[in-house]
Image 1: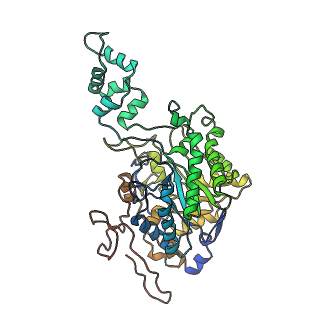
Image 2 (image 1 turned 90 degrees about the horizontal axis):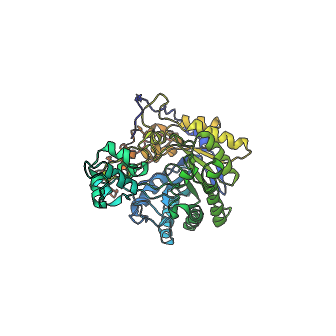
Length: 501
């Protein structure tokens, strides 16, 4: 991951844990309505990808255990990982693009209901993504992938030491290109071909020369709507439409979207498809099923969307009937680190990825709550437009005092935490019971993110080597890491001790 040059080591905000009586009166633990769904409290576990599904996208016992463990901490809401809406291979990521996925997802819903004693509301995040290929070996790129053009053939002929104007067969052209230096590649190759060589080919929503890209506005509303209908049939309380980060819908929203078909350019055009998706989803699932979205407070890349754009989008989405708006930031392909040969580009390795998941060694602003002020500006715009749509914020939030201050100052309506919840799935419950001192606090080194980048089963360094001899626990294939956090039993208010780690 990209690291800021300042590299200042920050410490997490003090816990300042409340008593049970203080927690009972805290805003964080008060109910809130999201469309047809009522949360018992304003605690939220955002979507995280644990890489525990089958290669076909089906629910596994490990998926059930993962979400069941978070549900045992009884947060107000849990959002299931980004779940693919199309029938395309996507590795061990959940999918919902066909009716065959419903049975497993229904079992997942039932697992969360049981584990939380019915207290936790359960949403599933729906995502679409475009094709991306691994960074190729140069010989494979020039020998197989590169589409030769007359310009490339001419450039090779001009660089031959003898026989200028001599006809070369395409095989010779490819071999000549392969033998050229990196500097020559920069001179000769188009920007897209150079990127495909150095990073791997990646589709963009602006590739209107490809029919399937041109047709996205015609196809995506129905795909999202069908997926939402399956989510409803499986028993979820609602869906979160994934309009964030490096993926299809966020790319339509981005200021880099220059499509000339009415779906790009001015932000009024860029919001068009997200609104059409929402309308089709709502028509399919009805008004009594919660539909929200996650999108970016800022792209955090050169030429990308700003917080002013995001405020405009928030007003439009809220006005169109979105039941909640969940804000993230950054996490784009455009500034990602070059992958190794044979690996795909990971959109959280550049400066924008850092904005999404900053670490404890940071710039002067630090990693804790970087998304709060941009989110507050978006909420202010929504409220100024006369709408009360709940706004969810997350990003480096790891203490009760942080969350409560955000809510009491009106910067958001719901406060979520991903990495802190991974470190301690019980932390909301511990705080609510007045046992905050027992919270296992995230150290924000992004150990979990490193596993995600390699598509390994995600765990937390604070617990994945604890109690490995515990009977019945799920462990990694090498047996060296546990796959869910250790259990926790609340202490007796009369003076017993908690059983932790």
